[in-house]
Amino acid sequence: MPTIKANNIDINYEIRGKGFPLVLIMGLGANLDWWQPDFLAAVEKRFKLIMFDNRGAGRSNDPGEDYTVKTLADDAVGLMDALKIPKAHVLGISLGGMIAQEFAINYPQRVQKLVLAATSPGGDKTEPPSPEAMELLSGDRSTKTEEQNAKDLIPILYTPDFPKNHPREIELFMKQVLKAPIKPDPYQRQLGAIMSFESGERLKQVKTPTLVIHGKKDILIPYGNGKKISELIPKAKFVLFDHSGHALFSEEKAVTQMVIDFLK
Image (cartoon, rainbow, N blue to C red; front, top):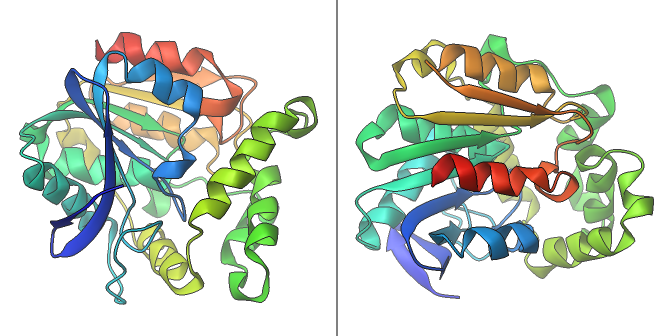
């Protein structure tokens, strides 16, 4: 996969499909390998997908300094500039959804439509993760193997029955995570960016057509966060999937068609 200089760092990216551009932004510790293959296969038939690794994750450069979610949004815009893409749909999940919020707030002229998945407005409007998810997020990853760190994610990303009912999906997830796992220091910098993030009342500035989607059983970022975002963004549409956790693109197949219908 190629890299390109954007916002003064080397960003690893991949382009698939043809049509109007759709920028996909991944979450904490994740990279472009993590996108659900069936989702990509469906959306690339209608859109030109721009996927990339956030700074410090996957194969993108880690400058070795702290940063904010706004910095990550600047990276995404810098990538669009480098690829000469003036405007795009933007879809972000989890931390990627926070980046997408900053993107829409600070660069509204660059966003055609916005999809925010399993994400939070941050600050005092945040509904916190479950105790077990919080313990895992704040734990010391450096003392564990990459495989153990990946396995630890399964119970906080998926609903309890999903792994045993869909073992191939979990096997695929493990392979995706272990392709280019994030190092402990960049992970902590991403976590620091999340902790300092707050979109809050600024979301009222967003005039971009927005779809907010969330799993009702999400214990990492509870669905009240998505509901709050939808209440703050004028005319945003909020859809709650009753049987899904944080990994709603894997657990709820209807998400894919809903995203396509909203963006087309």
